[in-house]
Length: 464
Image 1: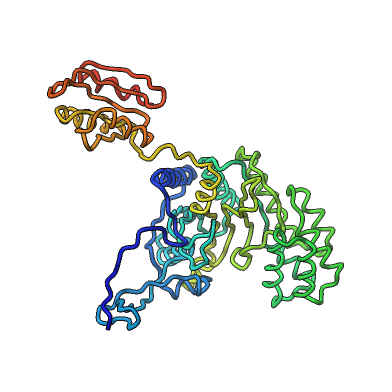
Image 2 (image 1 turned 60 degrees about the vertical axis):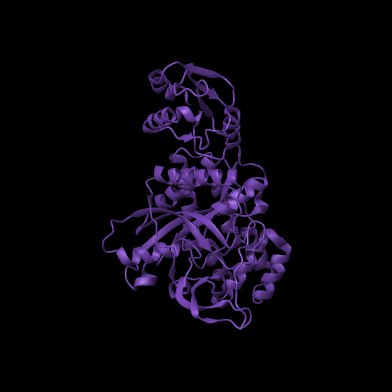
């Protein structure tokens, strides 16, 4: 039996991020900005456990081959091939979205909760997919959800506004919300003659509209539902290819001949969403009615949304979601009347997309607002100044090697992108600071004080 000797491997892991120092700082700032945007809308953080039972992941719609399961090393045995310790499987898996952890938590505490419940969750998601540009096996999702009974459309709009706030804060550029209501797609298909058994395949075909075009979609529809006449397919396609404002949708629906009260109520709800957005002072948000938006319709039960960066639609949706029912009842067997509305931002994918486009500022590598540069003789003074500024809420980096020349310490501040450097000037070998000099690292402007007390009183006022 060969003895296995593990060797460290330094480098990226396929399907996971491999950020630089500056990217890590920028990414952390993104997560903080998103959290702040969600909090502005009254969403409360939920930090669920990092793992779930595999049975729960399968139960809530997880695709088996995409679910990562956890195992532990079995020191009692080895694999014959290479001598590695064998592994023992467990009943634990990694979540493939942030909704399952929410559903399980609500199912446990539903009787104790005050509803409606507004939560945000920025956490890891793991999917066993083929790694490629823009597609990760492990990534962050930022979710907002409102859980309650008989939720008004204002809940959908509130989630939508929170997502819009976060995207605006991240400065991703102009974006558009593509909206639909599942009743429009499903009911039109049913009234046209598509059977329940054919529905999933027909929706999958419609979902390919942007990729393969209307002509090929029409051909595939007739193959999947051969009972549909060419005229029926053409009338359906006039609806599914519609892109425009909500008031213009109703005539298109009525012209199809397949619209009924259910379809028109779905259309009316889309109009109400636009009205509520306007009432919130957000009439500038671009809303595009897209009846061909059919992804996830088995999961959602109302208004659905996907978000695209204008001019870069081919990169895919950067945020999506909608209304869903049976969130709690599916797990608990009770509380079937509890429903939810939720939207999520694919943070890692969006960050990677903008980094590739060189649209993410990467000048800074640290949270420090000022670096204190000094010689070893005045180290105690450097610490005093640092602690005073920190007590005032200033992020301070005390340089870790004062034996370095002052120019090297300033170079450090410049490379880190720190806005200011506070230099403690003293004669070599003297424990007395002759002058405290604050330098703006961008403009090169300087201001100085002759005493420690003057520095303490004035320094923070000059840090912007």
